[in-house]
Image 1 (cartoon, helix red, strand yellow):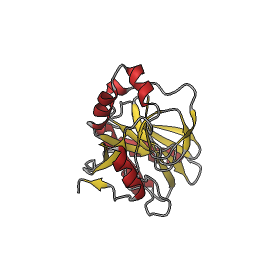
Image 2 (tube, helix red, strand yellow):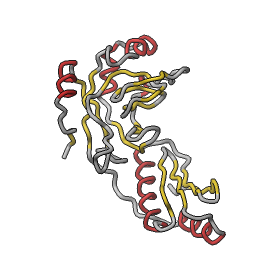
Image 3 (cartoon, one colour):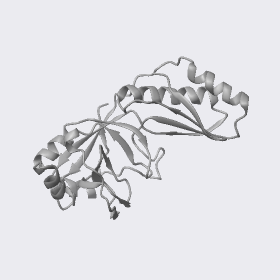
Image 4 (cartoon, one colour):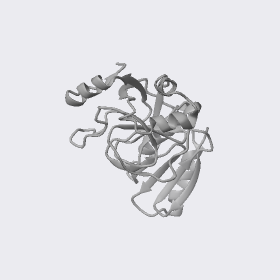
Length: 232
């Protein structure tokens, strides 16, 4: 599964794959990201991950010899590192007062609320990358029965910790923000803390599972937060 190469601008090179996002593709993305750091670490300012892309922001404009080096690089074989096995448990309260779109989404999907909760919590989700907001996880693995288009008119304010569905994805708003996803619950866990190093507890390649909690448990964790649980 070799990547293809394209030059976006004089200082932006991109590796891309014509594959649907899945664990195999993510394994290649993360392994090629490591290979870029080893091969071009002194020349690359930042690598921005997508579901199917690695965009490399360069320090200097590309010369012809640089382009040849990149072309040779993507044609070479690299060692694939296994995906992480860490699984993070994120408590979520699916109370309609916290998930303001849960009832309307239930009607639109012709699924009762308990079925939505079951489908949403029985899956494990792989973190592919972070974007949109600091600490916003782009997750893969949402049950197709829960796929639903984003809102045509986004909400002006979605509260931090809101768990939502948009298209074929689910995610958590780490900070208050406008947004067009359908909010189905809320977590009391802080997902992004700029005072910590690193400010986000999880990494691309690791997994997330949503754990349903009661409103009482939500209120308790909001006032007395506990460390996020993982399987190690």
